[in-house]
Length: 256
Image: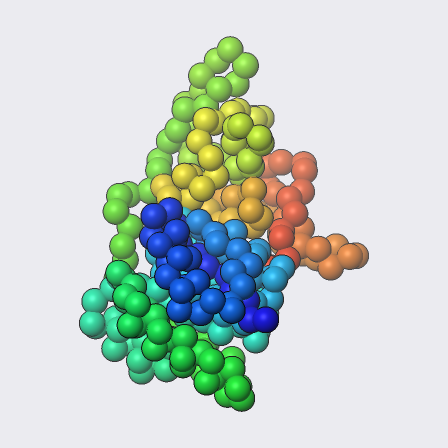
Protein backbone atom coordinates (compact mmCIF):
# COMPACT_ATOMS: atom_id res chain seq x y z
CA UNK A 1 0.00 0.00 0.00
CA UNK A 2 1.32 3.45 -0.94
CA UNK A 3 1.71 5.95 1.88
CA UNK A 4 2.40 9.66 2.26
CA UNK A 5 3.35 12.44 4.67
CA UNK A 6 1.47 15.75 4.61
CA UNK A 7 2.95 19.02 5.89
CA UNK A 8 0.65 22.02 6.30
CA UNK A 9 0.85 24.46 9.20
CA UNK A 10 -2.76 25.67 9.05
CA UNK A 11 -5.03 23.18 10.82
CA UNK A 12 -8.17 23.80 8.76
CA UNK A 13 -6.29 23.51 5.46
CA UNK A 14 -4.48 20.39 6.66
CA UNK A 15 -7.70 18.68 7.74
CA UNK A 16 -9.46 19.64 4.51
CA UNK A 17 -6.56 18.31 2.43
CA UNK A 18 -6.50 15.02 4.35
CA UNK A 19 -10.22 14.59 3.71
CA UNK A 20 -9.98 15.44 0.01
CA UNK A 21 -6.95 13.21 -0.50
CA UNK A 22 -8.81 10.33 1.15
CA UNK A 23 -11.62 10.77 -1.37
CA UNK A 24 -9.38 11.00 -4.44
CA UNK A 25 -6.82 8.35 -3.41
CA UNK A 26 -8.59 6.11 -0.89
CA UNK A 27 -5.94 3.36 -0.98
CA UNK A 28 -3.22 5.83 0.02
CA UNK A 29 -2.21 5.56 3.67
CA UNK A 30 -1.48 8.86 5.44
CA UNK A 31 1.51 8.03 7.62
CA UNK A 32 1.68 11.48 9.23
CA UNK A 33 0.03 14.91 8.94
CA UNK A 34 2.46 17.50 10.31
CA UNK A 35 2.14 21.17 11.25
CA UNK A 36 5.74 22.29 10.66
CA UNK A 37 8.76 21.48 8.53
CA UNK A 38 10.85 19.88 11.27
CA UNK A 39 8.14 17.39 12.21
CA UNK A 40 7.59 16.64 8.53
CA UNK A 41 11.27 15.91 7.91
CA UNK A 42 11.43 13.53 10.87
CA UNK A 43 8.20 11.80 9.77
CA UNK A 44 9.51 11.38 6.23
CA UNK A 45 12.77 9.89 7.49
CA UNK A 46 10.87 7.53 9.80
CA UNK A 47 8.18 6.35 7.37
CA UNK A 48 10.02 6.59 4.02
CA UNK A 49 6.74 7.36 2.21
CA UNK A 50 6.14 7.16 -1.51
CA UNK A 51 4.87 10.76 -1.57
CA UNK A 52 5.30 13.91 0.51
CA UNK A 53 2.85 16.80 0.13
CA UNK A 54 4.73 19.87 1.36
CA UNK A 55 3.46 23.36 2.01
CA UNK A 56 6.12 25.84 0.88
CA UNK A 57 5.90 28.27 3.79
CA UNK A 58 5.92 26.68 7.23
CA UNK A 59 7.36 27.52 10.66
CA UNK A 60 11.00 26.51 10.94
CA UNK A 61 12.02 24.53 7.89
CA UNK A 62 10.32 25.58 4.69
CA UNK A 63 8.98 23.05 2.23
CA UNK A 64 12.03 23.70 0.05
CA UNK A 65 14.42 22.96 2.94
CA UNK A 66 12.56 19.76 3.79
CA UNK A 67 12.74 18.70 0.15
CA UNK A 68 16.48 19.39 -0.01
CA UNK A 69 17.12 17.32 3.13
CA UNK A 70 15.00 14.47 1.78
CA UNK A 71 17.66 13.72 -0.85
CA UNK A 72 19.47 11.90 1.95
CA UNK A 73 16.70 11.19 4.46
CA UNK A 74 14.32 9.56 1.96
CA UNK A 75 15.66 9.76 -1.62
CA UNK A 76 12.88 7.74 -3.27
CA UNK A 77 10.03 9.90 -1.93
CA UNK A 78 8.25 11.94 -4.58
CA UNK A 79 7.54 15.55 -3.68
CA UNK A 80 4.38 17.53 -4.34
CA UNK A 81 4.56 21.18 -3.31
CA UNK A 82 1.35 22.81 -2.15
CA UNK A 83 1.60 26.53 -2.80
CA UNK A 84 -0.35 29.76 -2.75
CA UNK A 85 2.20 31.56 -4.93
CA UNK A 86 1.32 33.30 -8.17
CA UNK A 87 1.86 32.31 -11.79
CA UNK A 88 5.45 33.61 -11.81
CA UNK A 89 6.40 30.99 -9.26
CA UNK A 90 4.26 28.33 -10.95
CA UNK A 91 6.30 28.83 -14.12
CA UNK A 92 9.39 27.95 -12.10
CA UNK A 93 7.72 24.77 -10.85
CA UNK A 94 6.86 23.72 -14.37
CA UNK A 95 10.32 24.47 -15.77
CA UNK A 96 11.72 22.26 -13.04
CA UNK A 97 9.22 19.48 -13.82
CA UNK A 98 8.08 19.45 -10.18
CA UNK A 99 4.64 18.40 -9.06
CA UNK A 100 2.61 21.12 -7.38
CA UNK A 101 -0.90 21.93 -6.22
CA UNK A 102 -2.19 25.47 -6.10
CA UNK A 103 -4.13 26.60 -3.02
CA UNK A 104 -7.02 26.34 -2.52
CA UNK A 105 -6.64 22.74 -3.67
CA UNK A 106 -9.53 21.73 -5.89
CA UNK A 107 -10.80 18.20 -6.43
CA UNK A 108 -9.95 18.39 -10.16
CA UNK A 109 -6.36 19.51 -9.61
CA UNK A 110 -5.78 16.88 -6.95
CA UNK A 111 -7.24 14.12 -9.12
CA UNK A 112 -4.88 15.08 -11.97
CA UNK A 113 -1.93 15.15 -9.58
CA UNK A 114 -2.81 11.72 -8.20
CA UNK A 115 -2.93 10.29 -11.72
CA UNK A 116 0.51 11.75 -12.52
CA UNK A 117 1.96 10.26 -9.35
CA UNK A 118 0.52 6.83 -10.10
CA UNK A 119 1.93 6.87 -13.62
CA UNK A 120 5.37 8.01 -12.47
CA UNK A 121 5.41 5.33 -9.77
CA UNK A 122 5.24 2.69 -12.50
CA UNK A 123 8.80 3.24 -13.61
CA UNK A 124 9.96 6.86 -13.87
CA UNK A 125 13.12 7.20 -11.78
CA UNK A 126 13.83 10.21 -9.63
CA UNK A 127 16.81 12.29 -10.77
CA UNK A 128 18.45 13.74 -7.63
CA UNK A 129 20.62 16.19 -9.58
CA UNK A 130 17.63 17.56 -11.49
CA UNK A 131 15.67 17.87 -8.26
CA UNK A 132 18.50 19.73 -6.53
CA UNK A 133 18.79 22.13 -9.47
CA UNK A 134 15.03 22.74 -9.50
CA UNK A 135 15.02 23.45 -5.77
CA UNK A 136 17.85 25.97 -6.14
CA UNK A 137 15.94 27.68 -8.93
CA UNK A 138 12.77 27.82 -6.86
CA UNK A 139 14.65 29.17 -3.88
CA UNK A 140 15.87 32.10 -5.95
CA UNK A 141 12.45 32.68 -7.56
CA UNK A 142 9.97 32.57 -4.72
CA UNK A 143 9.45 35.81 -2.80
CA UNK A 144 10.39 36.34 0.82
CA UNK A 145 7.09 36.01 2.67
CA UNK A 146 8.19 36.82 6.22
CA UNK A 147 5.45 39.00 7.66
CA UNK A 148 7.44 40.76 10.39
CA UNK A 149 11.06 41.39 11.39
CA UNK A 150 12.61 38.62 13.49
CA UNK A 151 12.41 38.62 17.27
CA UNK A 152 15.11 40.75 18.98
CA UNK A 153 14.43 40.19 22.67
CA UNK A 154 12.13 38.17 24.91
CA UNK A 155 11.08 37.88 28.53
CA UNK A 156 11.50 34.58 30.39
CA UNK A 157 11.20 33.39 34.00
CA UNK A 158 14.21 32.44 36.13
CA UNK A 159 12.94 31.48 39.56
CA UNK A 160 11.10 34.46 41.01
CA UNK A 161 12.63 36.83 38.47
CA UNK A 162 11.53 37.83 35.01
CA UNK A 163 14.56 38.27 32.77
CA UNK A 164 14.88 40.38 29.64
CA UNK A 165 17.01 38.33 27.23
CA UNK A 166 18.44 39.48 23.93
CA UNK A 167 17.82 36.80 21.34
CA UNK A 168 21.42 36.96 20.11
CA UNK A 169 22.51 35.88 23.63
CA UNK A 170 20.50 32.64 23.45
CA UNK A 171 22.58 29.52 22.78
CA UNK A 172 19.55 27.30 22.20
CA UNK A 173 15.87 26.73 22.91
CA UNK A 174 14.62 23.33 24.06
CA UNK A 175 11.09 22.09 24.62
CA UNK A 176 10.40 20.95 28.20
CA UNK A 177 6.82 19.65 28.73
CA UNK A 178 4.74 22.81 29.35
CA UNK A 179 7.59 25.27 28.81
CA UNK A 180 10.50 26.05 26.51
CA UNK A 181 13.93 26.29 28.13
CA UNK A 182 15.91 29.35 27.03
CA UNK A 183 19.62 28.62 27.54
CA UNK A 184 22.25 31.37 27.61
CA UNK A 185 25.84 31.46 28.85
CA UNK A 186 24.53 32.59 32.27
CA UNK A 187 22.04 29.74 32.67
CA UNK A 188 18.47 28.80 31.87
CA UNK A 189 15.12 30.53 31.96
CA UNK A 190 11.63 29.35 31.08
CA UNK A 191 9.45 30.69 28.33
CA UNK A 192 5.70 30.11 27.95
CA UNK A 193 5.88 29.76 24.19
CA UNK A 194 6.12 26.44 22.35
CA UNK A 195 8.93 25.66 19.91
CA UNK A 196 6.57 25.86 16.95
CA UNK A 197 5.62 29.47 17.73
CA UNK A 198 9.26 30.45 18.24
CA UNK A 199 10.11 29.14 14.78
CA UNK A 200 7.69 31.67 13.32
CA UNK A 201 9.45 34.69 14.87
CA UNK A 202 13.16 33.76 14.98
CA UNK A 203 15.58 34.70 12.21
CA UNK A 204 15.80 31.54 10.07
CA UNK A 205 19.31 32.47 8.93
CA UNK A 206 20.59 32.38 12.51
CA UNK A 207 18.39 29.90 14.36
CA UNK A 208 18.13 26.35 13.02
CA UNK A 209 16.04 23.47 14.22
CA UNK A 210 18.25 20.42 14.88
CA UNK A 211 15.62 18.23 16.52
CA UNK A 212 11.87 18.35 16.92
CA UNK A 213 12.43 19.82 20.40
CA UNK A 214 15.59 21.91 19.88
CA UNK A 215 16.50 25.14 18.09
CA UNK A 216 20.14 26.24 18.13
CA UNK A 217 21.72 29.65 17.54
CA UNK A 218 24.31 29.09 14.80
CA UNK A 219 26.40 31.93 16.24
CA UNK A 220 26.75 29.88 19.45
CA UNK A 221 27.92 26.70 17.69
CA UNK A 222 31.58 25.76 18.01
CA UNK A 223 31.42 22.56 15.94
CA UNK A 224 29.13 19.90 14.53
CA UNK A 225 30.36 16.31 14.35
CA UNK A 226 29.27 12.69 14.51
CA UNK A 227 29.91 10.52 17.54
CA UNK A 228 30.98 6.87 17.42
CA UNK A 229 27.39 5.78 16.76
CA UNK A 230 26.99 8.17 13.81
CA UNK A 231 24.71 10.52 15.75
CA UNK A 232 25.09 14.24 15.11
CA UNK A 233 26.48 16.27 18.03
CA UNK A 234 26.63 20.06 18.39
CA UNK A 235 29.29 21.57 20.65
CA UNK A 236 28.65 25.08 21.90
CA UNK A 237 30.97 28.02 22.48
CA UNK A 238 29.51 29.16 25.80
CA UNK A 239 27.91 26.02 27.25
CA UNK A 240 29.53 22.74 28.42
CA UNK A 241 26.69 20.43 27.33
CA UNK A 242 26.33 19.06 23.83
CA UNK A 243 23.15 18.90 21.76
CA UNK A 244 21.92 15.96 19.70
CA UNK A 245 21.09 16.47 16.04
CA UNK A 246 18.23 14.32 14.80
CA UNK A 247 19.50 12.25 11.86
CA UNK A 248 17.31 13.87 9.16
CA UNK A 249 18.55 17.34 10.16
CA UNK A 250 22.22 16.51 9.55
CA UNK A 251 21.66 16.96 5.81
CA UNK A 252 20.74 20.61 6.40
CA UNK A 253 24.14 21.30 7.92
CA UNK A 254 26.02 19.64 5.10
CA UNK A 255 24.37 22.01 2.63
CA UNK A 256 25.50 25.11 4.54
